Amino acid sequence: ATCNDASAAAPSGLASPAPRQPFVIGVCGGTASGKTTVCDMIIQQLHDHRVVLVNQDSFYRGLTEEESEHVEEYNFDHPDAFDTDQLLECMGKLKSGQSVNIPIYDFKNHRRCSESFRKVNVSDVIILEGILVFHDQRVRDLMDMKIFVDTDADIRLARRIRRDTVERGRDVLSVLEQYADVIIPRGGDNHVAIDLIAQHIRTKLGQHDLCKLYPNVCVVQTTFQI
Ligand code: ADP
Ligand code: C5P
Image (cartoon, rainbow, N blue to C red; front, side):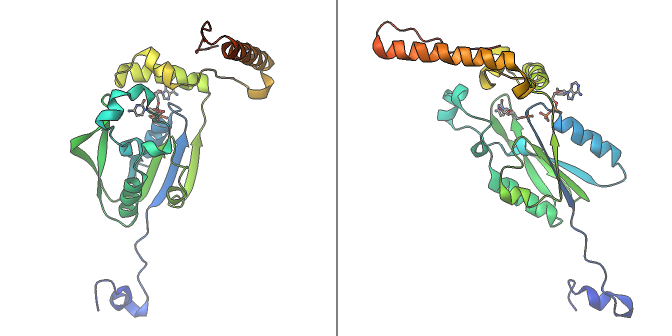
């Protein structure tokens, strides 16, 4: 019998149970919603099990020289910013019981650390967290459970400004430039915000028409925050 022939080794003709595949949990949510914090707290509670955390951030592609020169135009919130094939390869290995080396991403320089990796060992539970982990069907199909961390956008923005200026080498302006221009708390119930936005769009359209009529004299205002 080969090593894979479990029934040959089992007493009384009973097959020994196949090794259980790790339970995979996907944790998604907006930036600075608290995904990592929630995962760390779950891991603490499950201290009697082997639980590993895989961050989608680790699979950010490093920027090319050309992209680095125009980093303010690069969209880090688009699925193409991640190497999802590599993430799938790592998750596939972990699921089948192999340990893997996961890249380490340097947010300050928008690059991967070329020399070092984080070794992730075989485990009972794999938690995969990230802003876009529910985007790709192949990644979703790996998950036995999906969790969405929901935190108000204004709280997330406050946290992100603090974290990115302290830990990720950003200034406040660059964080704001990456963010939405307007946040509407309470959605459709917020009539004041919607009125203000409609008013602003009307003003913009007026400017737009003026620009078409008098292209040489028109000054276009481009930012708007409430
Ligand atoms: P994510 O992984 O979703 O980006 P993090 O868990 O890293 O979010 O949290 C983002 C920032 O907000 C971190 O600096 C973290 O310390 C802080 N933070 C997370 N949860 C809370 C909370 N409940 N209260 C205050 N600050 C928090
Ligand atoms: O930890 P968090 O989930 O907030 O990380 C994702 C965020 O990091 C994204 O919203 C993205 O805009 C930002 N990011 C960045 N610079 C990079 C890579 C990601 O600001 N080089």
